[in-house]
Amino acid sequence: MSGASFLVVPQWQGSGSSRAMRLIDGADAIRGDLPGARTHQVPVPAAAGESLGSGVNRFSSLAAVREATEAELALLEAPVVTVGGDCGAELAPVQHALAAHPPGSVAVVWFDAHGDLNDVDSSPSGAFHGMVLRALLGDGPDGLASAGESRLAPAQLVLAGVRALDDGESAFVEQNGIRVVSPGELDDPEAIVNAVAATGATAVYVHIDLDVLDPSAIDGIGYPEPFGVLPERLTEAIRALRRRFELAGAGLMEFAPENPDAAAHDLPVILRILGALTGPTASQAPAGSDGAR
Ligand SMILES: NC(=[NH2+])NCCC[C@H](N)C(=O)O
Image 1: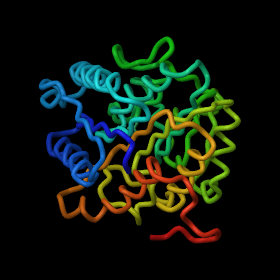
Image 2: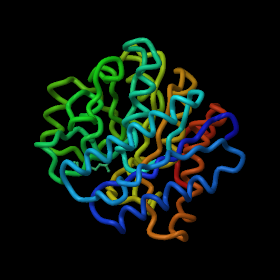
Image 3: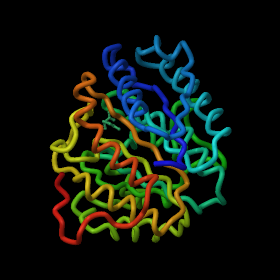
Image 4: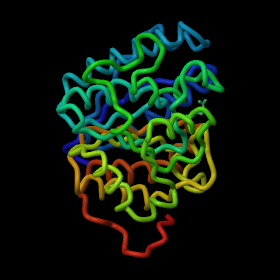
């Protein structure tokens, strides 16, 4: 894992203080397990921890986290692997990667059970982590929506492993012609490579929400969805992407273990994913392997 820089962003969604603690612990647990890696931590603005309610306060604290993350990213050499936090921690890293490359040359691969394509009005929960991609596409709460060179275009986005779209999200995907690679299609690592190649990109930003994995493979997530991706399939897809495209950046989000023992249970699979993002890119799985751990 040497060579890569890791940026830890303790960030959470506004659904209660115990959940906030779980997300912080998850990021810290991962950081503690990256021997020899260069890790940096975003100093989270003090107000962010207290404003866990809904509405404007929460969005403004997320904007403060976004700015603090951007300031750290500006100091680090790419590619940086950002460890969250909830998916809202991806705002600055994705914007930073897009702005650092020529327009249209970076595709964002969103490995996630969810679409994260709600806007403030369509969101069933009000939670920003379900709106992150929409904000990156330019529709989001004030201070959180991308604009200019850091704005993502629908044609640059690939949803991978998605299986829990809200109705409004499905309509948005259809209307905007967003590319989708289903969990089953990830059985063949070339499927994701081909989807990214079709965007015309030469570099890729890889977002991983751990809930893209099948719940049989990971415990410490808040939003498990059945019929997910096995770890081996995910790591092979990541390696295949890295063999073909420059890695513009990556994020690993939503690790929220109940306690340190639960974190220890999940860490081996998380470290394999981080290894696929930062280590050798040769295929590790024999052809036809079932990918179970
Ligand atoms: N990245 C996630 N875990 N997203 C969960 C989103 C759930 C739901 N679609 C919502 O908007 O609230």
